[in-house]
View: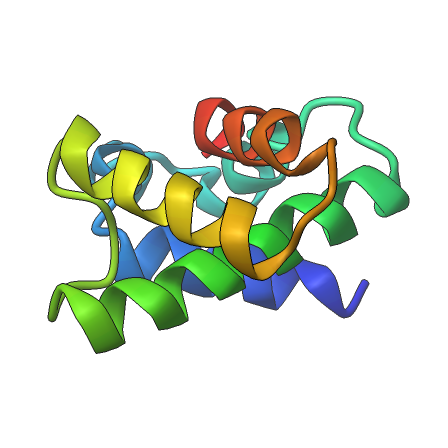
Length: 100
């Protein structure tokens, strides 16, 4: 799966707390795959692509890889609504943020 390394990279760039917990596991790789749950490849692809957009935007505009608080996520939301005028953008962003 080509999107799994991207998923892992986003977790690393976001400094996701779950990674520190996984480091202590004897089954780190299996546990990391478990984070995906039963997600289909198409779902993983959508979430990863949305996260990549946000990570790039955050790096350019905020100087960090992941939102540091709700204001950063809202700034990206309003940027995204203007840049990607799709009715589904807010829902896709919300799904991605809750998934990661």
